[in-house]
Length: 175
Ligand code: ADP
Image 1 (spheres, protein in one colour):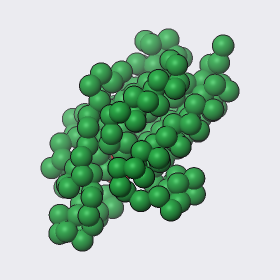
Image 2: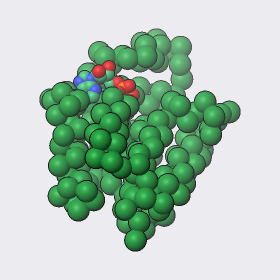
Image 3: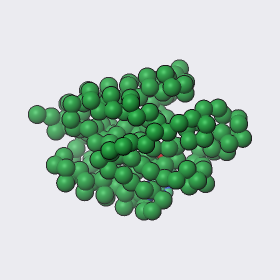
Image 4: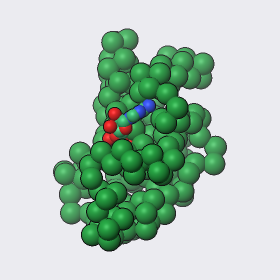
């Protein structure tokens, strides 16, 4: 039986997926675990280079990330996906393919807060119409209906969120 699993972070741009995944990665490594983070922005520079932001391309991107997570997690690695992954159906498809050992974490934040943070300056451009099809502005985001955990990043620090994730992993028997 593998000791690996996949932690799937989904949420709007600027919700805190990358920030929290980095802390969780560090803490899991400190426990002696092998961890690999697949960050949406990074993946798009190689594995998914050339893909755009149509529904079809977004789904292809998520299927690729999902496949890599699947391969890693069945080999004792903890795979962490940090990608917007806006469409419920393809997230559920990735979950199904894992056949268990898949933990979906909804990194939730009110859109207004994400817009206020505007980490990459992209909301400003999207709201000005300079970028089309931006998730949350003029492209859909479908929140998970039954995630293993919901994190409200407007209500606690990234450290507190990471600690709650580690606690949940212990309670679910993954650590
Ligand atoms: P995403 O990966 O979801 O696009 P990022 O992690 O890149 O989001 O950006 C989230 C931003 O919000 C960072 O600037 C981070 O410092 C800030 N932030 C404030 N509070 C939190 C929190 N509780 N959790 C995560 N990020 C937070």
